[in-house]
Image (spheres, rainbow, N blue to C red):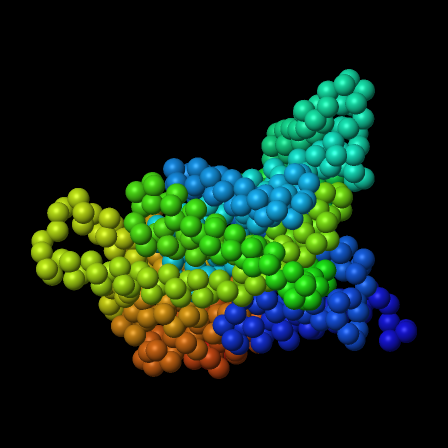
Length: 592
């Protein structure tokens, strides 16, 4: 491999092993993140065999952090947070405080300095958004009240960690470590302001950056994207989005001393207000996923598996904080806000893990000279083990909830409960979505984007019974505001199709643009209802053939319909007698 550059070797081996281990993890119903981390351990310096270039992996991971935080910003919604802010904001802040204090206590027992103990505790206090969303989607909880609270809780944690990432360089500067905010430290020393001076100067620079992004970037970035979109080149649009994400992050670091993560987060948040935000997220998703995988691989490279054997006591203490301490604090907090036991248990299980923000914070802490290698290894061990054990936490929660419901039913059978005592359990039952829709002989629409949205509008105009399956929580909320029945989740999942009563539906419209996912939906729906009329969209003839092979009755391709409309206007005569079999007439006549 002498003729192969270290960069290519690192990318190829890292992504290849991440795929292998990620697929194995998914096969055993474990989060693929575990597979990515294991791939990093295999190619890391602590394992025999091929060792990837750790410096190059770290730089690639920085790009992964930028794109990851850009994606968080794109999906950030004040509206979603406001709907559950009454419990999510104080609850998340209180839980962060409790977990941080527990981490500080463990660190103090090991004799670490206070600033290192504080950063260590903070790294243990924040859960992984990626792991949480996947767990909620698999259990169809994202659409429930408890799911919304969990997501809002994580948004608050993410914002809090973004602020920590801003202040950490300033704290490093006060500690006299390399890599701190040197400019702020020098100014503070010049005027004799000490710690508060450094923090003040740092926050002032961040405030200038935020104002520029809100006032200037809010107008310039969407305007620029709209201009590129009108050029009609998807390639240029994709490059423009990447240039904005990377350019703003880099500029924020160079000019304002703001972390790459925060710069990318604000770039995404500003762009999220544009009507092109969904397209921007979709165009950059493959690259974000690829570099996010490299980020997790690079994190795995830093982990020494022998740390578990060398320091079993500290590792168990870290796991206790993550799995028990955080969860117990969250349970008490949620119950104190008079939410049902089931909701409190779900939030507890959701928070019983740590992930990407913990990695980012640990790596930044080491670079700033605040965290030791030992502390980082403990954080990585806690992350890997907690992500691995998180499904068991949800399984335990499900069993506890089932027992609580059985006892409640037994109590109701024994005697008539008081209205006040029954109210919490009634609330708990209300927040569960119905197992199957009440509709029959209806139309199921998969996706409510540009095409699906028009189909939905036409169905509403014609007062036809229908429901929508949508993966985007934001779009689902908008449709609910319009009194449209929506199921949130992956339409290819058996339980989602069952909830949509595909077996009793008249037609299925697959309006999502991704051919592979759409084909899976068509195949699953055809298996559930052999008599179902399935109508799908496709970009190319190859995609259309794929849909037909999967079982779609009618497929509409954009190019074919555009050509038909143009020909109709050129020679407004009767339609040609021969019609290609994949594009059966009547699709638009039935819905538009």
